[in-house]
Length: 142
Image (cartoon, rainbow, N blue to C red; front, top):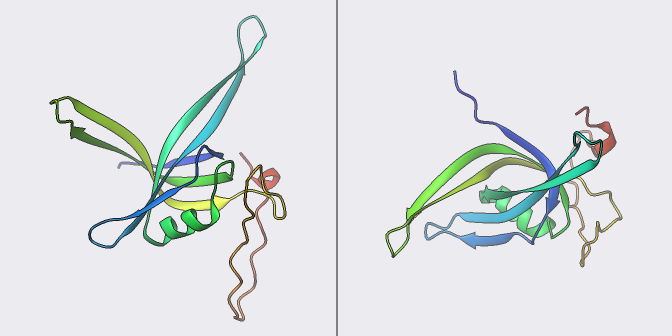
């Protein structure tokens, strides 16, 4: 049995860049920063930021491009993927990124989270389905 699963909560370090492949598939790429805080042996608080490259495809790419912006707090769920390529000078390069399967916007409604432009959520579809409540960061059990 194998498992390749990634879950992160962090802030976008730049606006998503949405492109279209020659086959017509939309792809969004962006970076998410997460912080790790600990106390060293002397009891001093230490902090380290990690930067994660994220790629979203198809409809999720469209949503990320439309609603996310630099500074947005997000939950990303997906899998790790490593790409490799050879540059013109013959050097082999590697890049590990998160291929997103799911994204949840964690910014509070009405706050811009330091953003330069407002984000408005999509209008709810008219249906008899119950409307889901917004997930609050404080309610996440981990």
